[in-house]
Image (cartoon, rainbow, N blue to C red; front, side, top):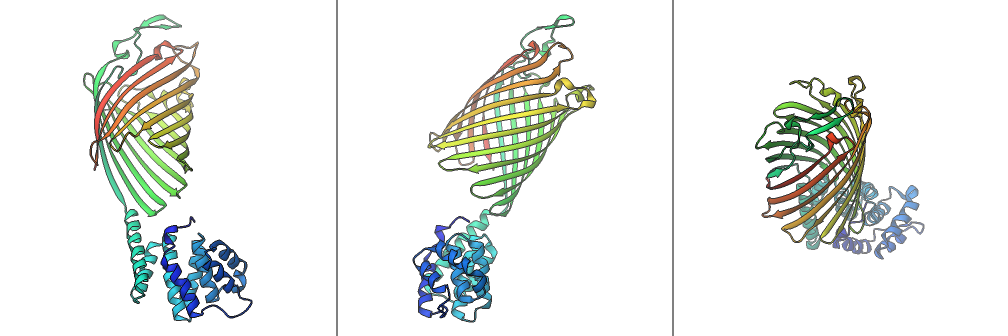
Length: 452
């Protein structure tokens, strides 16, 4: 465990003084206690702990040895060993002074190992014995820290509502071409509804985040997202979606792990469209000098609704495996993030949608510039390459492939503690070897985000 410099309080120096004045060390020449005490007094805690480990089998159970070994373990960052040793002294020592000192240091060891309830109870028990004023003062400091840490471990519930209004040059991500060449019947004319459609829109999202901490380093999280996209001129591309996620988080200050399961449902124009079920795991590492790394893997079952005239929608059913790696660098007011990802989507063989099987690989970069506490402009850019597994049923002489490039510029304005104003402009270009799937898209939006 990382050494807690905050915990090297005057309690330690009081202990050293009392050790000398009460002559509690064993008198035998062969005892390692005097040497350990000398090392401890010189603040050579790791050496004192190592010497204790060498003599642990022979001297474990001796109150004087257990006490100085417990102190050395605590100050050298081996708090679990400290708890075991000091518990023995607090329970078995016949010397009342040594027993009282052991209880005080045991309370501190409980604090370091995050056993906050036991630490609080023991500190209060020592406080009830009316110890010297400086010891009382230090105990009060620990009790305040315990209260702050316990409050931080209380369950939390947050709500966020975001709403934007904007303009979309291509609300259905469709081609602008009215005539498409096909290998069998030549040129066909697309229905206007299947071509690029411009519209203004509003998009509202509500998010609930609930966290139940088991300890400082382990928690259970539940997130719920509700969204509604409303296009002003046409309802055909309106989207309602709901997504719920349950995840278990654990780790320490350096490594964090998350394992979760999520499910989602999307309605298109108020009709069932798509359902998904996913399991995922991720790892994040906080490195030195502002460097952070992450890896994640997700398996998702994506299924399309066959009701409301969509009898062939199940041809689009796929199982997706996605891997993502990321690097983040915080350099002063700048935050850089680079991520790469690759995925494989396998269609349901029984449904016969082999042409919907595909692999895609992408690269994304973002840059945030924190001008001050209120304003943060940002930039995002990405590139994705897609390769389909087999020929398209209409364009039967071609395996579909393509690339998608995007660029987004935006701004966050923290107008108040719970209120953020957002603005964003983005461009997307999708090129394909099948003309039907070529499109470009400009999108502009501005909105508010409020956290309850």
